[in-house]
Image (cartoon, rainbow, N blue to C red; front, side, top):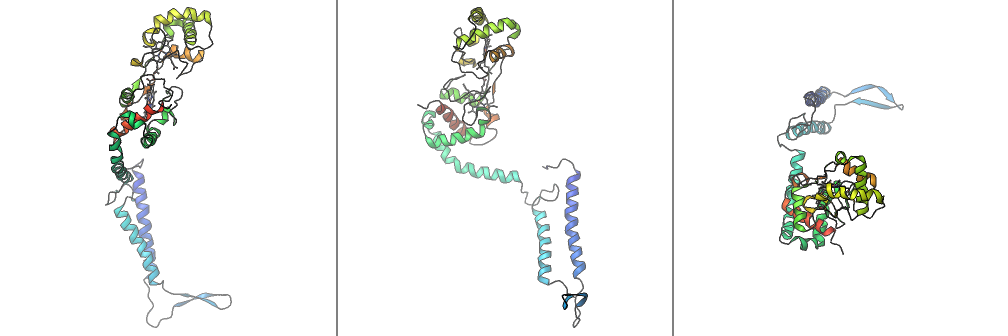
Length: 306
Ligand code: HEC
Ligand code: HEC
């Protein structure tokens, strides 16, 4: 595996690296082959400073040369063992990914016993355990917070998990199923069926259901249209249906917005919130069962605070 974008670069880098090592070697050799004959005096350079300071051209000291050659040998051995020459992997086959995976395996072995303890307990018990909640929170921050927020309070389009208002249900089994399989809410676009005026009327009826300011005359006309077009999913009283994740429209909790314009947009264009399943959120991390258990408990606990 190589990160180079073009086959030219690994060759370019290898040639430069090797050429500079060989180049320094040749240069050093060329400067050190001449030894002083017995009795020969080192050459006296022609310049003199500060009146009497003279400069001799002595051969380089052996220990210093030794250090220099040592660095070259080190460079060659290093480049043989580890990756450094273009895409050559090195005899030790070391990779950043390999090192990361080894660290992950070590961490997993370390957490295994901790996880195993929690796996023995049911979700409600685990949810009450502060240590488990701390781990659950970290898992949530890693795998879930990008959509639900670090405080799990959600954002536009992403449900708040702390408010006790559930699209699908807040019991341990349902939360577990949500995290495992993911969810996909399907609110069909109904703008065409209702027309602009009809949509406005139904929207005002929805506003009235939620106890928000609305136009009572429009809402009255909207009521039967709601019964006809919306009640199948949102129930005749508008309280929603968890089996299909159609939200309660009467509690003034909004995921896409409770202003008239936002409700009209929901009705006109439809909505399709997608919660990815565990294979996407937790990917191929191991201890997946334990993480699922701790996450379920953490999410369950979020709305259980007294
Ligand atoms: C890519 C964004 C995304 C990620 C990542 C994500 N979720 Fe979700 N989640 C959603 C959306 C969107 C919904 C609403 C689904 C719908 O509209 O039907 C949702 C719904 C839920 C629900 C159902 C809420 C209810 O009211 O019934 C739970 C529980 C949940 N998520 C927990 C989690 C957990 C735990 C994680 C981390 C493992 C996670 N989510 C990761 C987007 C995400
Ligand atoms: C086929 C079932 C279905 C029908 C019919 C339906 N809805 Fe929905 N509605 C849903 C689902 C499911 C969602 C949640 C979408 C999501 O998860 O992204 C939703 C979401 C909404 C929302 C957004 C709520 C929020 O929290 O922001 C509004 C408003 C809404 N519906 C109103 C209506 C109205 C009014 C009608 C009739 C004109 C209607 N729906 C018809 C299933 C339905």
